[in-house]
Every structure is written in structure tokens, then in C-alpha cells.
Length: 277
Image (cartoon, rainbow, N blue to C red; front, side):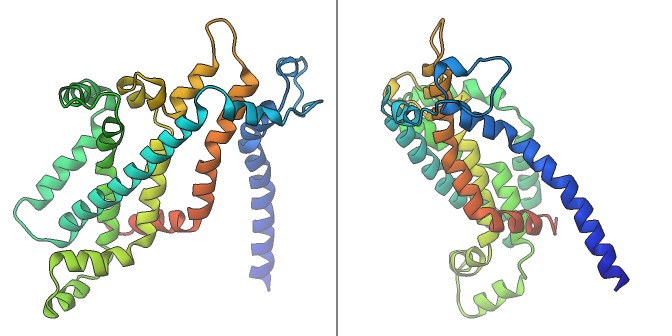
């Protein structure tokens, strides 16, 4: 009885602390949304007002129909889906090799591959750009998709999870005549749903919000992504801040929807991937 009362008191104190912190963390998002439906004259009033006096819900339609916004949205969605699928395939295959197969210098190769995570993206930016240009892929989907399909972090994350799966399952499958690929596709992958969803969410977030690499390889309006397109709403001397905020709200809706849909698997995947090293 005493332990139950103590737990209730502890949980109450914890929630009293967490709820204001959550509201504080959500404040920028709330401000973003209400700014998106404000008319231009209410954005910079002083003292600042959170709620608009005359909500302009048409700002979202204006944003969507202005410039080339639907094309930018399509480009971002298409590139993101391709990168996520590519990362899941390449990272899972590499992780299967590093965790389930036995061959000479396996751990050395894995450590060398893992070491590439310490190289800043700015160091590899110019060599990658030169390679893409010589292949004739500049300003194309190939340039925006292929470099992001390979991830050392994704390989590390999945390897850690694969190592928690008992090796006895592989041995039993080999006795039944299963090949390495059959073990990978029929045993390891179905048991790794949480880790795959975790990697998929992380890849989705990083690709959807990517700015530097698209800025380097894209030079036409039709190939722009959302992050590049948002820049066009700001002119040299003026900026339509309400339209910028409306465009930002539209662009973060897929991110929120993806995270909320995969939240359960995401948390489980992060927890399970850290169990065994």
C-alpha cells in the first residue's frame, strides 16, 4: 500500500514537471501555426499576439498554388521514399554480413566503415559533387537519391539489433537447406521490424529536411525540394512571412504524421538496438 502511494506521488510530481516542459517545447510549433494564418499586418505587432484577429485560412491555398510548390512537394516525397527504401536495403544487407556471417577481417572492415561517420559531410561534399558531375547526373533525381541510400549509422544500428537474434535460428535454417539470402529475407528481416522502422524514420527525417546537398546539385526550379523552395518565398528586400510559415506548416505535416504513426516501433527499436554491442 505504501509503495503504491509513493508511486502515485512520484508520478504526479513527474507529470507536473513534464507537462509545462512539453508545452514550452511545443510553443514554437504553436507560434508557427498561428503565424501561418495571420494577415501580413499582424505578424510584427507589438506587443506580440499569439492568436490572429482575422485568421486567413486561405494562406495555405495561396502557398500551395503559388510558385511551383506542388512540384517541390512531389520531388521531396519521391526522393525521400527512394532514399528510405535504399537505406533499408543496403544497411540491412551490410548489417547481416557484419553480424551473421563469418569471414576474415570482418570486424576490421566494420570498424573502418564505422569510422566514416566521423568524417564531416563538408569534407566529402566536393568529391561527391565532382563524381556526380562527371557521371552527368547533376540536377537529376539520381544525384539527389543515390548518395543518401548508403548509411554507416544505419548499418551500425541494424547490426546491433541483428546481434540480439539467436544464432540458433540461422543454424536450424541451414540444416533445412536455407541459403544466406533465405535466412536474411525469411528470418532476420521479419524479426527486425522495430529496428527497420527506426532506421526508416531517421532516414525519412534527414532526407525530408536535407538542404545542403540539394542546394549544391540542383539548379532548376522543377528539381527543387521543399527546403530549397521555401527560400524563394523570401525576396531581396521583402518576405511574405505568413506564406513562409504556411509553407513550413505544410512541409512538417508528413514528418509529424510519420513519427506519430511509427512512434511505438521507433522507441522499441532504439531500446533494443542498444542492448548488445
